[in-house]
Picture (cartoon, helix red, strand yellow):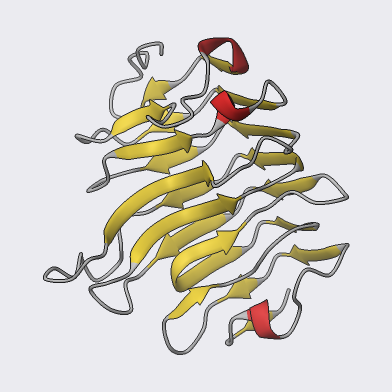
Length: 207
């Protein structure tokens, strides 16, 4: 039930077992991310006012975010916005019943090298990673991005597997789910089913 008005990355870096319950993470000035990297979790917590909602890298305990509300903003026109970003993660990650948008509040700042990236980005893995990440029953807004969920790098190793089920996607020009181009994740390493467009409930095409 706490409100934190500074990014917690400087206060609580990578501490195993940190859990936010009914909290609001809302820096008074736009930050890079509200929390990082591994072995933390959250329930019914708001992540606001950063270019990335949070970094999720798995860790030694299962990383679970449930019923969280995530919105982003651009600090400069060189920022890339991700609702949640995973960089070289290992372990188990579950994003469950969350409301996530990568479309920045206040609009997209043009003229720089930045832009809207993804509601959920899983990338920058190595062949030594073992990762299972699941996105389940979420509302995802990828407006102004190329891809709403980026399940990348699975081509490096069969130990990187992903699952997206029961999600609702805000209809936009954004591709709902992408497997990447370099180290493209094989079809057999992704389960995708029961995902729909939010406006009319029509099914999302398969990969």
